[in-house]
Length: 566
Image (cartoon, rainbow, N blue to C red; front, side, top):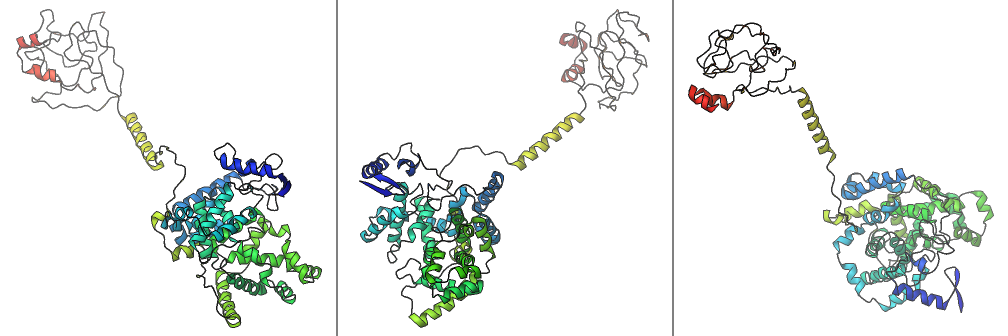
């Protein structure tokens, strides 16, 4: 037998197979409940997950450039990392960024922080698991199960009966009936919980629902719906100041606010507006509180009933109600609606002042309220100040952890680069190291290479135990090396014998070898006649070599010991 379900014709056997497969094959490769239910063959899913219906986007809206989106994500990540400081010291900047729109990748986390659900979750660790493990009140469980398939039936998360989305929605709503048994379950809570589940896990969605029901919209879902009736009177009084024409028209035809604003306010416009507008309204609503809901209602009433031409076309009560049920799409478009919301001159103080007036009138005409709800808190900052969080309550707990080596900080890297540059400069400025030959070279050693012309450094004087004159004396001490003549002229010859060291310092070493060969002439001529030796004398301003330990050790030896040592 065929039946119509979710906008298409199906058979009982197909639905039975779908349910069993969704329960049995949880770990299959199918990515969503829409694939399990067979919607991907002839239907196209938009970027929000809608397969059809009035809230499906046609793709005509222009998305933000990727560069702008990445910049906003970086800013939001910084705010979430230092949430308490931003909320206390720079809340106006947080409000401005919520008005621009929260990045989709961070919307769920931002909603949890804005609503205070993050703090509530950390302060009640394990509470949701405890409630989820309990069976629940059978009276509320039956009602919840009947409402599951009515929540966004064209969204891929909730399109399949018994799918993952509906299972999580049941867990959240059942846990709330156990958390607040005096309130129980209200049908308007289901779309609120479903919107939260589209952006966060079941536990986070539960605490977000708790905050909305207790802080943002207290008393909305209590028996009797007294709070929503009171807010309807507040909306009607604010309309008198924003759009007098619309106010007089509704008053003339005796159209009570409860007839057209109940679904708007109790579902936070999640069933009325296009989905892109719903998300932008929720971004501002969770930041600034219920005044955003009042502003949206005032904008829609003003646009639909704010001109005389429209009022002439809709003269009766029925026509007016039909007009408010079918709002023109151009007035609900994301850019237009957000701009109009920000221009409505209604503040939280105006809402509270009118709330006091209407509550006083309610008590005069109807008596005391049967259900006393907690005071309404206007916005995320007041919620945070009312319940100051601990620092550990705001710490982010990522679900995916990657072991990535931390890069070195940029400042330290800059300092290291500066140090390396200084080292390079000092190396460039330092003088080249001269190759000083061994002063006690043997006759078998090869002759040193001709010296290059280095830059003349300043003369260095080596302190010795004995005073050495600046000029070389004519007489040589007793110990003279084998290749050194007995007497040395005052001026150094241009050509030096083979065994003369490469560099001749201005100051002669303190001691020289003792033995002198017989073949060495007594005097050294100014010019050497040996054709094999044509080496020029090195410059006289080269600094002398440092005294080696070998030299110091030979000073104390006798001539015989020196011969043996050498």
